[in-house]
Length: 314
Image (tube, rainbow, N blue to C red; front, side):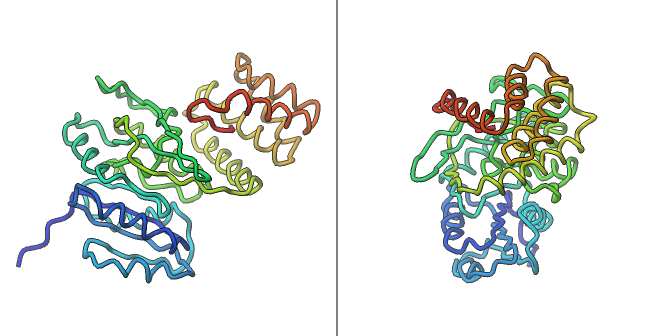
């Protein structure tokens, strides 16, 4: 008997204690109109009945891999990539779901695109507290032509990893997920990938992304650590304007977290690097008047920007 043909797509779902949600994610993959795939579920040492839920699906395309200890989402995805047999790699978060035609449309786009296109991504529906909002992914290149430069592209911020299908060969060149990062894991990967391949956007929401609430302190601490690691890793590749942006973000989050001295220092550094940044000037100046004044400015900013597409607090 001949060796079984490898699937065209390897879909990777990392999961941890999501027994109540992972079934929905799995069904949304199995219900795709494009069926030439394997589904690799990497259980990151769950303590609930996640394994039982996964094994309840009677489909020989599902492969279950379990970590002996919790290693985090980046490590779980890397485990999936190493085990993958497909030409293309797709990622699904265990609490999200795909529209039925997602893979079909993305594989068609990849097969018809120039060889340098290595990532096809889509828009999303962002669902939070029962409210559904269209998430416009960033435009990396005009759809009537592919722009390609062998340089890092920071415009990839805002692409959801669950919306992307990536050529396996791109990982061979750019490497896997950086397991040191507590946040911005997907963003950092996309930055690296941008040096080696082109991105193509399908301007259609093909993923339901369920945003989960997080405590402000945890979110800020993780973000500060991740941003500092990003600056350290890409310092030589950033121009002054880009570096100023990340100094501002570190300063802003540090100040919110109560680390006034560190926050003010980074905000001032952002102004020195890019004095034309009005946002940086206002934030640095307001930080001189204490946390209460700074937080009032933040609330005012949120009121002004509420309703604009893809508004992020940062």
